[in-house]
Amino acid sequence: MLPKGVIAKIQANVSKPCFWKFLSPGQNWKSNSLRIIPDEFVGSTSGAFEHRIVISVRWGNSWQLWLEREKDDLYMIEEDWDEFVDDNHLGPNDNLFFRHDDTMFLEVQIFKNNGDEIMDVPLEVEPETEPLHSNPQSSYKDTTTASASASVEFSANGGTNGRAKEGCADIKNPERYLLNPENPYFVKTLSKKIDVLYVPKTVIQKYGLKFGPHDSTMSYLLPEDKINGLTKLYLGGKMVCFNGWVGLCRKYNLKAGDSVVSELERSGGLVTAVRVRFFNENMR
Image 1 (cartoon, rainbow, N blue to C red):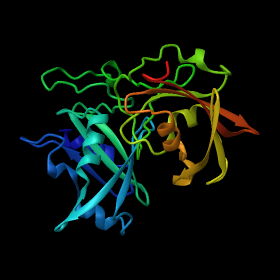
Image 2 (image 1 turned 60 degrees about the horizontal axis):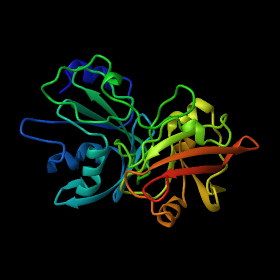
Image 3 (image 1 turned 60 degrees about the vertical axis):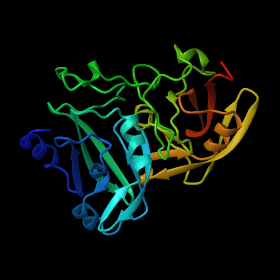
């Protein structure tokens, strides 16, 4: 657990409702009590959520978690919470800081017990007996790549969610698959829930990407196919995703663990299409 002084410092500049989750003796991250959303937090958000929440993390991944009420407590559904735990490989040295962002959206920061914040996708659980690294990037690596030096990972689950593990095809030098090497892109590994395609915040910020209005049309471009979708904007445009993704994944039998290179095409300064190249057992 983080020292109280560190917790107070992190919360000092946070004006919105927030809460922490960390392990107590005898607990693991899949313990039922870890799925409870604190009553104080629920009351302070004025009914902002009752049925579901969307959790996002620093590197742009998002998860949709359905909620259920048991007696007087509001729980995150076990399957959804367990997926969030697995995707982020939460271990005994992790601390989660939840902050209400907007309506049903929560932002989560992951801190190690020494106060270091995890800024990239964790690849494995850090053993409790191993010493903590002063630099979280020395033991945690992002599995999504944005061109140049940016490395980000994307989760396509209800947030959507990016599973931080190697896919069935290891994509090396993804730039070689781009039609235009100057285009923004990211590489993602699919998780179990594949409903929409989220654009990582880090990619949006790095390239200053702009998008059409909410529900404006966009396209997925494949070597011999074109699938239409819609642009979805949330949190005042800070969270961007495209629907129609689930149909593409089903049509081409994409599954959890498959790797995808997503190249963003712009027209008139706006992102209007995603050029997709995927790698699975059916297409290498």
